[in-house]
Amino acid sequence: MPFDGIAIANVVSELSKTIVGARIDKIAQPEKDEILINLRGGGANHKLLLTVNANAPRLNFTAQSKASPLKAPMFCMVLRKHLTSGRITNIIQPEFERIVEIHIEAMDEMGDMSTKVLLIEIMGKHSNIMLLDKGKILDSIKHVPPSVSSVRPILPGVAYFRPTSKKNPLTVTTQGAFIEHITIDNFKIHEAIYKHLNGISPILASEICTRARVPHDTFAKDLTEHDKSQLYGAFSDIFSQVMDCNFTPTIYWNEEGMAVDISVIPMEFYAKHTAEAYDSISVMLEAFYTKRDEVYRISQKTVDMRKLISTHLERARKKSFVYDRTLTEIKDRDNLRIKGELLTAYLHMIKKGTTVFVADNFYDENNPMEIAIDPTLTPAENAQRYFKKYNKQKRTYTALQEQIINNQEELSYLDSVAIAMETITDEADIAEIRVELASQGFAKRRPQNKNKKAQQAAAKPLKYTSSDGFDIYVGKNNTQNDNLTLRTASANDIWMHTKDIPGSHVIILTGGKTPSDATILEAANLAAYHSKARNSANVPVDYVAKRHVKKPNGAKPGFVIYDSHKTIYVTPVEP
Image (cartoon, rainbow, N blue to C red; front, side):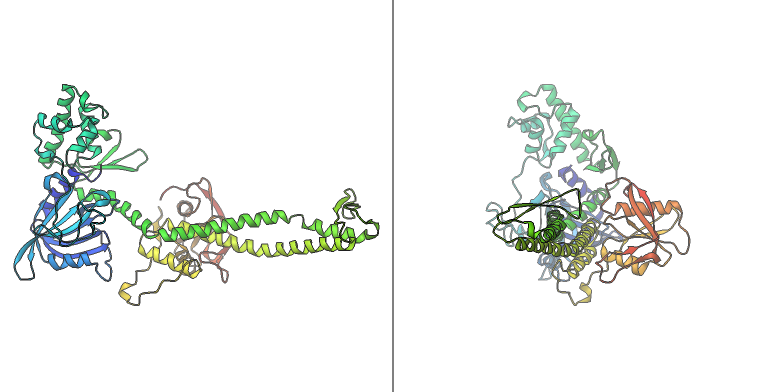
């Protein structure tokens, strides 16, 4: 279910019980589209997240912390100026809209107490956060000029008005009123419900139809009296729960263990799915959205790198194709030399005007060689022409050997970086890969910020613990792979990597002990899972004591050589 009116009603209920009366301690804007507010009240501290990320706009309590930019954005500065130390006096959801108003009493510039409204509109890509004073917009996290919306511009100094409203479902208290609203137009009934009543999403409309046992695609004009009674009964039951603040925040999971949807009321529509209930809607929202937000933001911040890697990979693959085609074209180059030698040996036998000469082949007595002759050239000149072609193709072959090796190394390297892109978990990982790509000449170096506060914490490899208690580390990129293998691991620790397949370096810290077969198998699974062969079966993973692993001088990041290894085959599963 989208973050609709009922979900917002649950959030407003939770916030009202917890932070009305609380004071605002700190305000931060860690992302361009989200605000994080630290609150103190009732003997406890709270963090309130307001985000208008188009992927998942919402507000809820959060446990997460994010680094703020060194220079606060203008909207954040405006909020700090007007709201810091202010006290929350009320939290409302007007007309059951997808809107939340947080009323805050704070001292103004004249030293008088005044009430400002921090408002969030949750409307998909049009979501916004605004600060209002006496009905006028002081500022908003997204500005909407008249050139974008002449009907409803959102700019400092402009009077605020809510979007065109439908009917508030909380005021629809009789069957007659309900039927009147959903039969205004001859829509299919589930469309009619969400198009004419505020805060009802298409999924909730379908839930009403499911409970009423009325087919979703029934047209309004075709409803029987029984259908009308059943639909109102289902609608009334749901909104009685809302009026009583009787919410059950729930995540619904499918058979594959994927989160399908969320709801704050029991959903017959998802009867075949597994329901996981929560005591708090904020906790439920954090569980459902945090990982998705993280993936979305990382995806947005790495678009340029992914495109860069894809471009270079495609270029390297085209080179491989050209090299293979050229090798095929010159594979018979020795025949050119032989033809030149045969012509030289039989110069006296070639008559003027001959276009084809068949020579006894002293390299293969059973196969005479047919040689094309250019009649405009002398026999000796024809022989030299074959020698020149041969020497040219020989030089091409020699040059190709080095080019093929370099291109294959580049392909393997870029494949490893592409895999590293799939294991990014934070900003530090992104920065590390950017630096690595720049060091290899694939990207321009970015100027470094000399202010130490602006420097990001070093990215860290993934850490796991085996069933026998051994620590296992997995590099998330080539820089981490090199650090793990060349600096972290001791001589007797176990090093692992998929055989001839780009992937992460995996280190088992043995502490001088011998890992069990179970630990070896678990670590091998990690190596296979964090490789290009993640979705394959029977993936070969080499493992060896770290003392047998060496990095050649001048090798690309992440590239090592090793010997004395063993190989284990695993079918990777998510750790």
